[in-house]
Length: 498
Ligand SMILES: Nc1ncnc2c1ncn2[C@@H]1O[C@H](COP(=O)(O)OP(=O)(O)OP(=O)(O)O)[C@@H](O)[C@H]1O
Ligand SMILES: [Mg+2]
Image 1 (spheres, protein in one colour):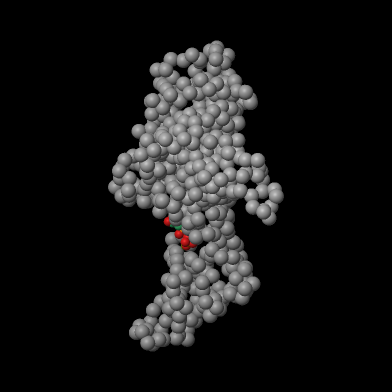
Image 2: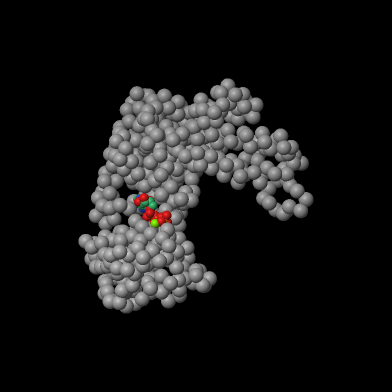
């Protein structure tokens, strides 16, 4: 079992490799960076439990870097590596926010002890931060996870609009949490202890929808054997939520307009007007203004509804919320399925972060549920993620970069960015293969056995390929992700012709 993830930032290859060997043998997950810049890039891409940071780096002072990191992630544990030990150094280190420091040469046992302690400290701090945030959120919006600027802005808006009676339209792609936000608006309003009635407008034929909304009197139509209250009556004093308002037919739109304007309606087949006090919320994943322009949505109704509108960002635009959502879903589905605590490995987490989630939070929720249900041990790895997530990343990378390999054709744009490769199909395929293998090795932390398993080929075959393709099996020194990120920016290796 992995004991935590460590980022080593040191410009000396010997130190990096020594630390990597030592820490990996103690079951820590190690990522290497050879400069302050490479280190910052790694930090921006994924969370770490601990950073081992060289005080003197070629592109900057480690202490300056540390201050910058502190601002970004106050909870990250940092141990400084210094060539000399002095009281002054120690004082400076602690002042700039390091938790500990080690001096070269170090004792392995001591270093491991320091590292373990720092990681434990980080876990506790994170838990603490998480608890506090969770507490605050539970107070405000108990069911909604989100810490991105975009979601915090939504929370603010929800808080602002909730107390009024105004109609709100919530826009957003499928699965972004429109219904959840509608419920939050209701819960934060003075109507909280009255009904919240969601109406699934999309799946109901128009006349049935009307009888559901407005009710009917006995004999209004053949099957109306008794009078029935509609949802508007049931929602009186509360909130009614139209979950896909754009699907409502023009006739029903006219009736809705009347309820909104007059706050009254008649049951189907009835003659009495019924007065209600209902707040209306609506959601749409289509732009209603555009539907108005196309003549598919009543303009007067649009203006009545669109008093306040709220746009939920797609998940791919707020990836910093993914870890929080994952935590939340992991916990919930463990509980639901009676499983002990689970967590995703670094590799799996990276895929979850990289994927662009066309189905948004719902798709993420489903992916986590699937993983939990199928999991048999604490650490859930990439193999528990849906095929679509695992392959799409690789395919996307290949597709993006394929253009670079393609021989130029007569009539092609001249400046397609780069050298005019003239390579045979064989060379192109070989290069693609090479890059896919490097990418996988990066993902598996250069563990060939694991990479072979993912490729479903024998280790010996992978080994031969690695030799034949001339892949360096050692991690690149310019930042651990060098090769993966550079999928495409290493034309020097490409068999480019004249
Ligand atoms: N910020 C969030 N925190 C926790 N869970 C969320 C969040 N956003 C969405 N979900 C969950 O994702 C799922 C989809 O959310 P919801 O049904 O509100 O989306 P929607 O926008 O109404 O989707 P659709 O357009 O398909 O109707 C739900 O299970 C919801 O609980
Ligand atoms: Mg919905």
